[in-house]
Image (cartoon, rainbow, N blue to C red; front, side, top):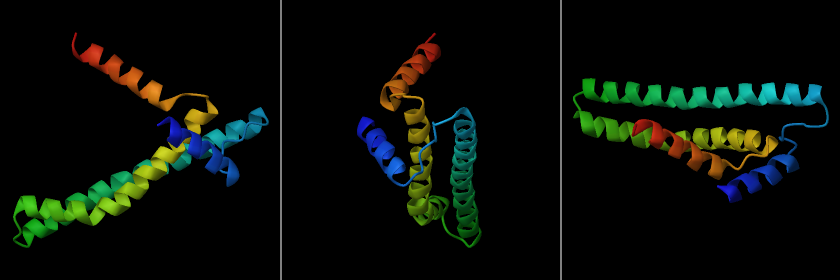
Length: 120
């Protein structure tokens, strides 16, 4: 994850996609813009999941077995889903980099927090 975060930092700076940090106003605008862009990408993931179920239901209504219909629908959206998840990850890396967070460390800490909460 650290390599991914480092790559993203360089890549986004190179393309001028990084969150601007030269003033409060630019940071505020950049953070809000990136928040909107991230939520747009999350919505695109949701749209693909909706498409998954629409395709599955259509194939079932056409007489296909449920499991086969679902598998074919998964295959249909898989590549686009990977692209949208990658877009989400890029924005999450960008936010983490802006706040000097280590995503891998934060992830494992959060998973442990959930584990502790669920085992109480």
